[in-house]
Image 1 (cartoon, rainbow, N blue to C red):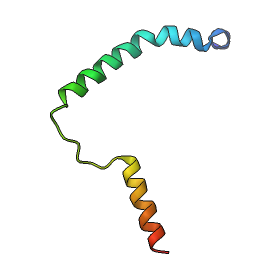
Image 2: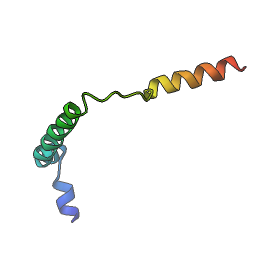
Image 3: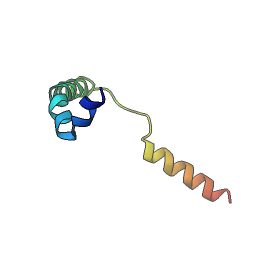
Length: 60
């Protein structure tokens, strides 16, 4: 097993996984278009972090 892992480079990995990654990207974009009509009312991670930082700073 070590000889297999030793000979495996990032380029080899990329070649092996390219079809899988392409399929996943197609599925994700298809899911995104299907959900396009739905609103995402949840705050983004950055908005939540900014709210936490500003509330923490104002309490000091």
